[in-house]
Amino acid sequence: MRAFFFITKSEQGGAQTHVAQLTKWLIEHDHEVAVMSAPGGWLHTQTIQLGGRFIPNNHLGNILHIFQLWAASRQFLQSVHEYKPDIVACHSTIAGLIGRFALRGRVPTIFTAHGWGFTQGTPVLRRLFLPLFERIAGRFTSKIICVSGNDLELAKSHRIAPAEKLVQIYNGIEVADSRSLDDDKNLHIFFVGRLAPPKNPFLLVEAFARLDRELQERILVTIIGDGPDREKLERRILAQELAHRIKLTGALPREQVLHRLQTQADVFILLSRWEGFPYSVLEAMSAGIPVIASRVGGIPEALEHGGGILVDENIEQLIHALTTLINKNARIAMGVAAKRSVETHFSIEQMCADTFAQYEQALLQ
Image 1 (cartoon, rainbow, N blue to C red):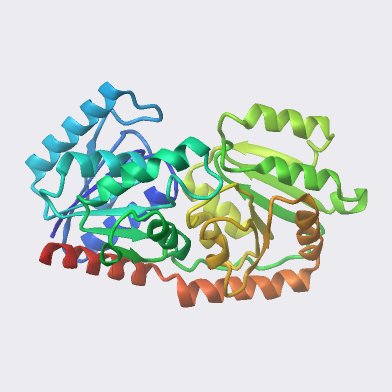
Image 2: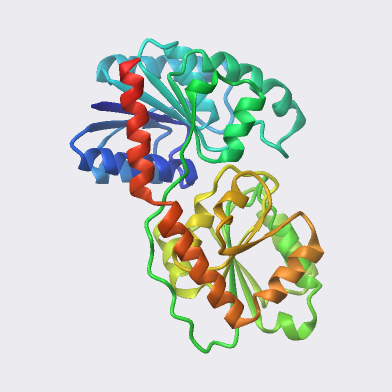
């Protein structure tokens, strides 16, 4: 099979991790893979290292005007024509719409929704208009893969496509080595994510500021990520006089992030106003790290079998969760449950095999 993956950005992220995993699996099973995206990011490098072909699309970016969309679509069509894939798999909202409107079903086309752009909590205009474009694009789609049951139900409730086109396949992750708990008196908490909506690290800072001084002196918080909210977050930390307990590292390469989680983290926190089915939660769970995360999107499904504490956008709930996980025995029990859940329910092999089965079905339609 010749597969052509089309994704908006190549920077580090959940959708990019998903594409890299599928690229690796397909190549290992003697299939050919090309990946088109904006050039220069993590996925660009990964594709080449894995033995795939990376095709840059210089017209993809954060802000797309009508002429950029047209140019990106034209470059996409030209590359598909030259590569002659058996299947095209689109990932992320912009690439998903460009790819499907450009091809209009002339090549079997899969779309994987890594969290719908109109999910609960997203801006109102997006929730009003995006479903219309997705319904039209759905007509040109052989299969739509939703990475969580929440996303599947959203697709059904918004009539994105007929039920027979919709399928749910969870993201998968490799099981990592667990951190051996030492006698460090500090509790090491890690928050990983782009410092921009929908991520909400400000809630963590506010909750931390309300802990009593004794608890504060037992906790070290590391926030990994960069983005437009960084300066505002730094000011908030300084205003609360917490710079000695909350450290911002900026963005780090994916391999460094995983290494730090697996060797230093006692607790992983993801606070967000909306999500799909985030890899960061699975990556922490796979290393036996207990999770505190927002009750949004597919996150409750990731923690359905144990391994973490769900919170609403509520400081009191977050304070209670932090206080609970100060207890080492609670962390150990929750970490064991987290790792077991990944091993049982979120296998990378199962994800790739189930996804490939959808590709094969699309070719038979």
